[in-house]
Length: 78
Figure 1 (tube, one colour):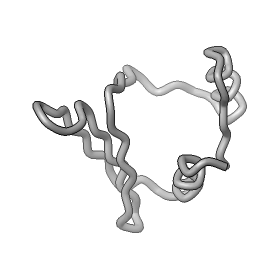
Figure 2: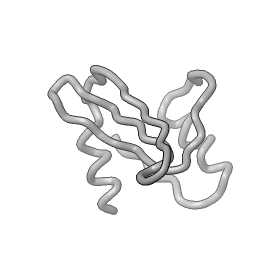
Figure 3: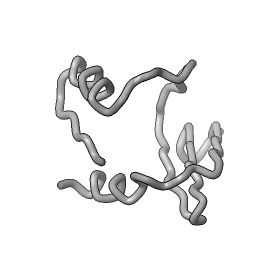
């Protein structure tokens, strides 16, 4: 299992208390999204990412099948 998978396993089951976003100018990442959890920990996503326009319906299997349509490797962490 990759380091990325190990980090993501740590957030399964946590409750999100809030979300902070940042659109960068100049130095640093262009976009940042912080997921803050109720146990006072957070996870940061950063880079050049697109923002969703709505929430989709679907369970883990639905998302796995959708992601697989684009090729590459799909990893499910539960």
